[in-house]
Each structure stands twice: as C-alpha cells, then as structure tokens.
Image (tube, rainbow, N blue to C red; front, top):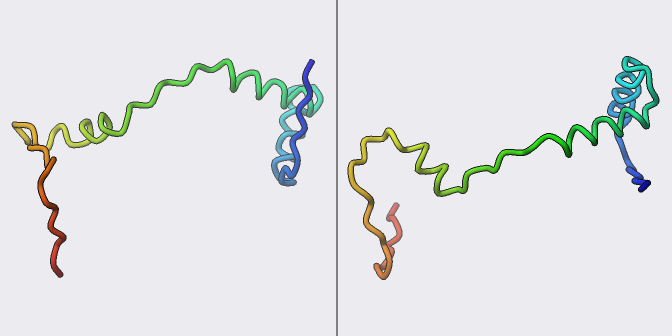
Length: 80
C-alpha cells in the first residue's frame, strides 16, 4: 500500500477529522482513507467550456442573429 504524508493541516481541520472518526467508530487515519475513497469514486461532471457558458448565460437576451466577427478590423479604444 502507498503512503501519503500531509503536512501543515490546520488544527481545526485535524479536530474535525478526529470528531468525524469518533462518530464513525474508527481511527482518524481510517476517516481520511474513507474521505479520499469517496472523493475519487464520485464521478465529476465535465464543466462546459467558457464559450458555451457565456452563450448559455445570454441565451435569453433577445439576440436573433449571430454577432459579426471582428477579425481584421482595427480596434479603437474607448475615449473617456
């Protein structure tokens, strides 16, 4: 079996782990094992890419046609 050493854990985190372990009736080390097992077994959903998230956010904005691309056009900064 592999070993993992985790350093610099805050005292409140350590106390929380100890309390959870006590509730479950096992050692703090076993509590950490259980937490890690659950973390890697739980499938993570693929997060949509940025463009898809932006499009979803503004889907109901009333835009009926695609925006023109600005390729090759000079960008003029806004004046204040």
